[in-house]
Every structure is written in C-alpha cells, then in structure tokens.
Image (tube, rainbow, N blue to C red; front, side, top):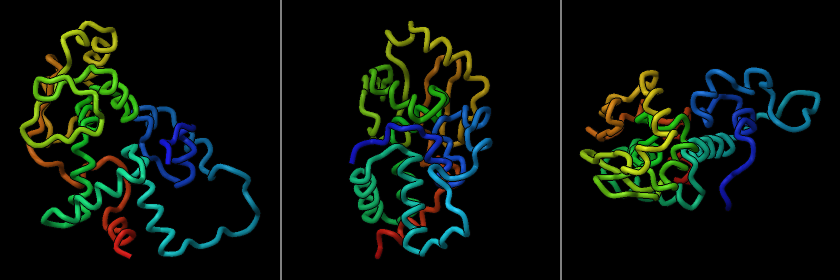
Length: 208
C-alpha cells in the first residue's frame, strides 16, 4: 500500500475531527471548519451506525495517518509493542512518538510532521552527531538531535529558528531554541501523543 499523497484535509473530514496533519495550519486555516461533512456525495437519511470492528479500524487508521506510516510499518510497531513489557497500547504510542521525524516536529524544527519528514530525508538533521536521513529512525532517552553545518546556512533554518519562540515543546524533550539542538530527556508521555486516537481500541483491533 502506497503512502497517501492526496489532500490531507479530506482525511480529517472523513473522520470528523482535526488530526493536525498540516500542523499549525490546522489551527489557523482548517477546511474542516468550513466543510465539516465527510468528502464525497452525501446521501439523504440517517448514516448507518458503525460496527465495533469498524470503530476499531477507524482508530487504527487515525493513528496511521497521524504518524504517516504505512500499514506494514504500523503492524511492525504493534508487534514490537506486544513484545515489550508493560501496557501494549502505551508501548505502541511510545514507539511511534520516538520516530525521528516526530521528534523533529515536536522539537519545533518543522511546522508539521510531513515537513519534518522532508527535513530529515533531505539530510538536514543529525542524530547523536551523525547525519541521518531516515524519518523512521528510532530515538531513545539521551539522544541528541541537531542540524548539519551546511543546513544551518539555509534560509529554512533561519526561519525555523525565528519561529521557535511560538513553539510548545513537550516536557519530555529539552530544546535549546537559540542553538536549535534538542535532547530526548525521558520516555514520551502517552497523554501528549500526536493525534486523537485511542491506543486501547487499536490493541483490540489487532487482538481479534
């Protein structure tokens, strides 16, 4: 299954809530505010009630879109979460939150997850002193994220640093807004996850 490349606002309209797929733009300029109905032709009459299985699938898809991962990648994350000690749903959220592209976004180096993925792929980011262009690279507590020397000379870097003052950084990350470097200081807090999905429902979906 290929990555979705269509209008992301259609995804939010499909699920009837903001998934913050455009980052800050979802707050200031959101299509869902003007067109709250699902995409496609609307038929008259009441909408059919979703089954439990459909609701579980809905949560799983919301999580996938929120982190921009493919189905096979998502299944791999779930299987890894099952093998880890603790609550599977919380483990799944931590694994997704610790993706490098998500960390770059949460640190304020990019306005959206999609933009963060591009920043990483274009080789602008360093992980523990080494240039890394893999958005799915796993991070852990103690890891340091920064910019390459070449990237610090770009116009994008200058604009990103100017916008850092308006960024809200989670407590489990520590960021030097002037130097544009950050550190993962502790495991992610599940309640501060990216997206509005219910991880417990996703576990129910894969447990059947």
